[in-house]
Length: 167
Image (cartoon, rainbow, N blue to C red):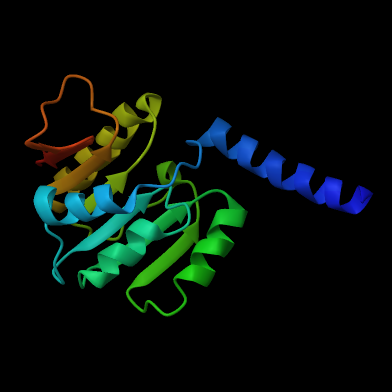
């Protein structure tokens, strides 16, 4: 019994620590995701989607079903393991245990998805602005639940906002 309690305490500690460095794990609703990738930003095989805080990999697997390559960054090792298990048959999906704020985006990234928290949005936008300028092309940001303060989205669907970040 004591071992089980220590294991549960360890799992809880991992989830609590990830909140300090990122956002809490909140799964995206499947219907809302389906709308995002059909109405807001229709994914295609031309896309490479990056999911910031990819959690259990649901967004990555849905992107792959649309033919898009998908890369997830997650800092919670438990969710990385779960995501890799659930995505093991998806050859278009790659999951890294990294903090998105400290990685270099794949050069062919076309769209970034985040179900984040408000305090991270300015930093995410700044990173993507730098990416767009460096690569001299637009990149799209889909933010679920949070807007980028001072920036007008080009489209909205439910609680999701689409931004075009130009060089």
